Length: 383
Ligand SMILES: Cc1ncc(COP(=O)(O)O)c(C=O)c1O
Image 1: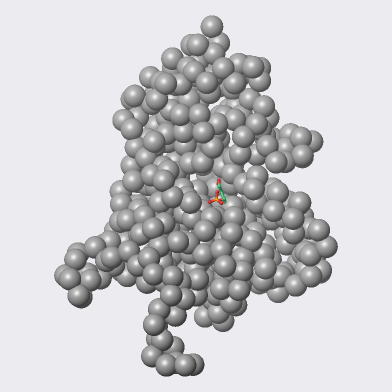
Image 2 (image 1 turned 90 degrees about the vertical axis):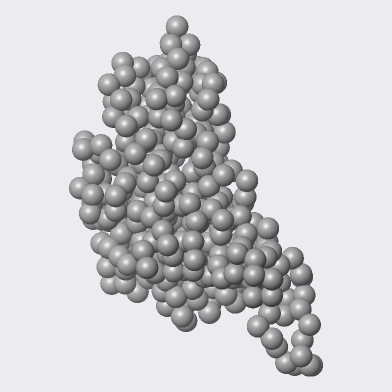
């Protein structure tokens, strides 16, 4: 079956007791056991829950993995993946990285547990040079947040395995609709389900998907032992989100490309970052590894001051000023002050996250309405 059909049917069987087309939400925290020391399919909701399982089964199928584990947030999922490392191990992460992942690695996990460093993964030579003898995990984002850099996932998988490390890919921006990192050799795929998988700005969640059963067991142990699991209501909302994922993402990609093209011609825009534009340095790799779209996040460098950038993001009427992304409603933000505020200022500007960089998450509104909103915001900000 094709992606869209699987997204609706895998793991989502009708309820045999009532015939309900939509499987019920299982809220029970605990399950009756047949006897002491005897286990049914479920015993305690942290260890396993049917509603969570339904979502995990569907997503594992869409990512072509052997199993998925759903967590209470994207950060809980990333933290669980990092817990695979032993004290003294090193993780090498992309330079163009979500601020929360940077903060976890820099400020929490580096406190005597694991070592972390960052390098430009969009250039495999640079990334390879940053590998250390104790590197056990490469962690990349493609497209990266917020500069939309593109990393060659197959090339990175080859590099990781040559060095005896695993490759983890935060694929939140791409979604399994347009990129499936496990098929390109990655070991772990991660999503902030808060974004496209949920898709409606009403659920917080995260997921890890793997293709190796042994790795799945290791991560399951970490999840069950540390407890940051996705709740049943969130799991239900994520399953529901998956059913329209392909339709939403394809349409959002189309609108994003249209708006990115128009923005390149706006006199107040110095640069547009979007992998679908032919002058984006990662465009050839994106054409190879992204299937039928380039994502729906567009970043732009305004030709003006930080004050004008703040006025711009506060002047849109339809596009709302908020962190997060990937939902049906369009959002915009200033990464330097919002999603990437946790970077040390020097490091942030070294990476090109300036105070005039705007990140747009293109939703499902009519793109002409979004364009008119942007045009009037430019007029107000630069009046
Ligand atoms: C690329 C990326 N990874 C991870 C996360 C963290 O996910 P969550 O906010 O669900 O913890 C985010 C959140 O914005 C993100 O954009």
